[in-house]
Image (cartoon, rainbow, N blue to C red; front, side):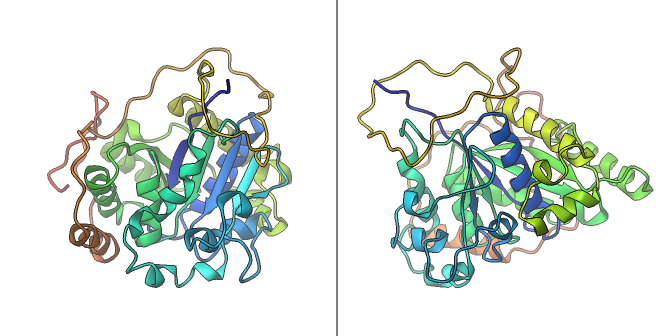
Length: 349
């Protein structure tokens, strides 16, 4: 009799570049790992910034995300350890650059990642959390992330352009939830690179609160020179400057993610499983700072819908085209903060 662990899969996504998406993915994953959770980071960006920041980018032709999606390697052949206990990475390299064109004619191309990760569900030694670092676009790799994930985390900057394109992103997420992944919900929005001395940052923060309300994480990740320097040393902020303000901010955001994902709740009772025990993924470590109380449950941000019938390939292709080619709205939809735990209504969605 073994414990079947429920894997929480989070897509860290924003089609706008330079918003601190990779930084958030790397450091939030590290913070969760340091709290005793087994975490797997997956680099979906052909630029491979996440892989480079951990000094784990494979040479061309070596096992990587591309070779996994292409069926050349199995999941456990591609995983690599990092310098942080409990933290693993599935790296990518330039082999992924032409993947969208190569996989365009594949049947079920939007589910390649979900199928590749299906082995994790039910494994007694599966990670607690999987986090996708999505590319700065809404193409096939981002669509795969949304189909494979259960939760969406959106990092933004406190700047004027933070609102630009947000309406399009949320619309695509909602359409994927409606057509391809009924279990998808919005975990929240994290504001990074915040400077309280700048009037513009405070004004943008006010606008974000007005439009998105309790979807925003309460902690802001402040601008920090050490945070910008850490990736060049192949380290996270917790290794490079553990006493910095940025390290404190990411620890606080990670604690909120633990609460929202229910990671602090008591472990499930053992259930029987026929899945083999694999030693390639380690047993979870005891958290260094255990929680004092279990959190309240965090409601889904999307409306609960009955799973629709399978869409034909033409409709899936239409969704892909909409995701990659729709023009960004100049203003976000007029969201109302949700009081029922459902996705806020909008006439623009």
